[in-house]
Each structure stands twice: as structure tokens, then as C-alpha cells.
Picture 1 (cartoon, rainbow, N blue to C red):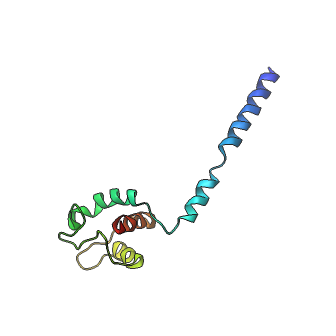
Picture 2 (cartoon, rainbow, N blue to C red):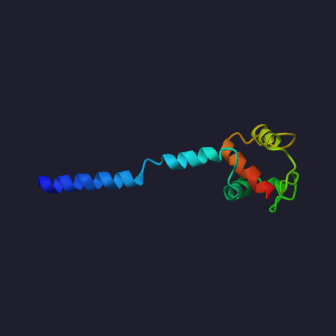
Picture 3 (tube, rainbow, N blue to C red):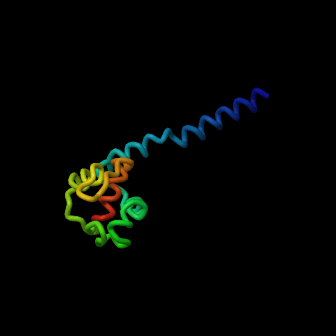
Length: 106
């Protein structure tokens, strides 16, 4: 019985060691802290921006967002705080806003 328990524990330890702690993914995220995910941004845009900025984001009630010439800081400030008729989107995280910005830059 001890032999089987020892073998099980050794095998489990090796499997866990091979899986790692996930620190590599965190390090990669920090390398890309200033860049967003345009594909994720597309989904966020469809859910939050389409109704005012048009289905292709070239403008409707709100101005065009596709190919925006706003700087990232201007874009972030407008999304977070609103401007003119645009409401503030305080529920969006900084990462989600980065994703949106990258999507609209494509």
C-alpha cells in the first residue's frame, strides 16, 4: 500500500510541476499592458456602441468610430466620462476600453 501511495504522490507532484503555476501567462500580459485585443473589442463594440455609431461604426446618431483619429487618452476619457450626448461607460474596464480602441484603429 505504501508503494502505491508513494507512486501516486510522486506522479502527482510531477504532473503539477509540469503544469506550472501560470506565472508565464501573467508575464505575457504585462508585456502587452498597453495593447488591446481587437477581436474582443469588436464584441464589446457590438454590445455597447452599435446603436449610436452604426452597425459598421462609420457613424449614425454618434460620430464615426472606425478609424478614429482620437488619441488613446482622448478615446479613453470620452468612453469613461462621456462627452456631449454620449453617456459615460463607467462599467467598462481599462482593458475593455483598450480592446475597443484597438478594434476601431483597424
